[in-house]
Length: 301
Ligand SMILES: [Mg+2]
Image 1: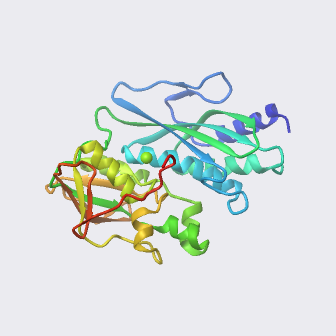
Image 2: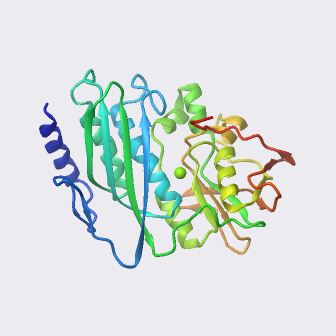
């Protein structure tokens, strides 16, 4: 199939999917056109998914890779409390992949886009010797209301959604629910929007492991954290997987003790795991009274 035919097909698939009314022009022109509302802020994120880093062609189907490519970016929107608007998808694939792979990739991606009412508004296709995808997502929040990392205050409670360690455990065992979870992460869009309405003090998504991501939140908030209770662990996961395993895509957030945080958000459990503390060395995390080494996934470590 020629690129023109592939693009025509993708355009039909995209047009059959969700159409956000502020995207007044989608696939087919040189750029997509967005007409924002005066009452909103727009948030943007971009995330790679790289063959050999985030997936392997032997173990992940094309649809799962498409799902994951969008899920990573949507998870960043969830972290900001944003409602998805549109995505732009750049995809490079080797010539050796079987016909239909690109279709399946987009079908996996568009199924998740439909679930979260995200418009596929454009992108790019290229040949390369490995599969590389980059997904840009745009979301909206009421003006001035985006959740940020820098708002945590000493005394705030620290929470996570869902369970930790499933993705790392799945990758290690390649079995069961944890392995499915690794291949098909669920962005916590509904929970992020609920947290924004609740007025939590800071939030982020867990992409690189609790210890590393919590450190990032603490650094932005110029504070430290004390993990003072059991973590909500995925069945079978070890404490190390829960503390340092990446790609859980749960939400980490802080809230003032005055904020009444519900036990579940959109059916997903929420667990208090610690407290934000004042510290002379921002980014310090303590677990059961001892400093916690930061061991999450750092691409440049
Ligand atoms: Mg993130």
